[in-house]
Image 1 (spheres, rainbow, N blue to C red):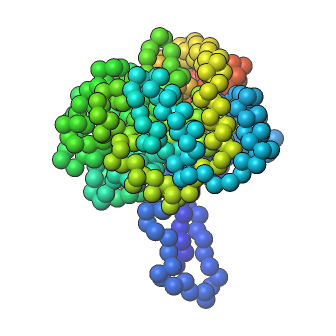
Image 2: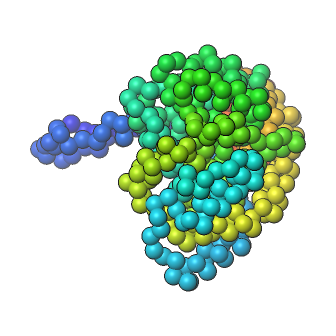
Image 3: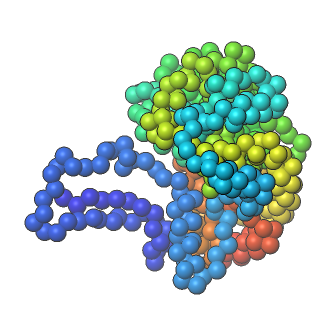
Amino acid sequence: MPLHIYLPHISPQGLEKVEIALAWDEGVKLNPRLKAARRALEIEGESSFLVLGNAKMLETQGRRIIHLEIGEPDFTTPANIREAAIRALKEGETHYTPTPGMLELRRAIAEKTAQDFGVEVCFENVSVTLGSKEAIFAALASIVEEGDEVIYPNPGYQAYASGVMFFGGKPVPVRLREEDEFRMTPDEVNRLVSDRTKAIIINSPQNPTGAVLSRDDVKGIVEIAKDAGAYVISDEIYRYIIYDGLKHYSPLQFDENLENTIVVDGFSKYYAMTGWRLGYVITPEHLTAPLQLVLNLVTACPSSFIQIGGLEALRNGSNAVREMVEQYAIRRGVVIEEVSKMSGVHMVRPRGAFYGFLNVKEIIGRAGINSLKLASILLEKYGVAVLHGSAMGSFGEGYVRISYANSVENIRNGLRIMSKAFNEIAGF
């Protein structure tokens, strides 16, 4: 029997799910026991990479594409960080390190955490990972059992729900609402807590909306988790990219004994180190050994010379971060300006990260399409790559996400093309 795989694919009808059948020669019989695990087939991949792949394919055909789909800084990793890793390679740093990472890097992460939040973290509870994705995976692997419920933001990063399901848990979405500026509020969380709740995932600043949780939001969610005997998993990968004089708050600041907080962070976004694949997770003491066993099983250890680059980032990267955030603030201003001129489109002002989450419900309503189809039309007909809102969860339908981790020129041109496209698509 043929195996069927479903992948987003560019077709003449647009970006849609197209069935690809992998069939064997007639007469060849496959042992029925030789099949992929259901949990692997049910993983929902990160759509931004799939859209990027489709956009790149169009570029190979000679098309010019403006990339607003991928959440990747357009800046090159700062020179001092690159030079530190190169120097480490030249000096022979090419061997295994301990599974949780180099001692110097773990100490530096603990020191930086104490400096930023005024909370003492033992370096032994810091584990270095291959990007924040592995940190999320390892955290979920360490706590989620069959039937456990994990509350997570929707729209939000799709790895949360996919990871929970992979380990047999039940993802429970909190609907993020425009009237709350897409903040994940304690009241909304409290409505969803049950005796099966194992963890509550928060992400601030948030992907895809740019929402930033207030002090009361974070404190309230921590208190709810404590009462429920649940963990808080805090994804803080954008925590330095924040605007309007707002401040980032971590659950670490409200968990006095550091017993139910798991912090996930990394170097990709604010140090412009996406390709380095370097992240970390901070765990309660009782969870550290189990999580490090998971990491040992999956990757043994992170690359040694890359960890040395991360150490340089922590020690001497703050000025570069500040300069990049200043540029993101300028770009955000361009997004706000251009979106305000669009007919039938509006956007909640992003307070952090580098995304705009555009409400296009009037556009797709007039055209009789969904956000996936709209994104396909923008890419194929107009040469602008964006991410459809439903890629960020069911409550993201009716929106498209743009990334302003791009040049001012590209952002402005891309949004002006989108405005023209919306007028034509909706018939304004």
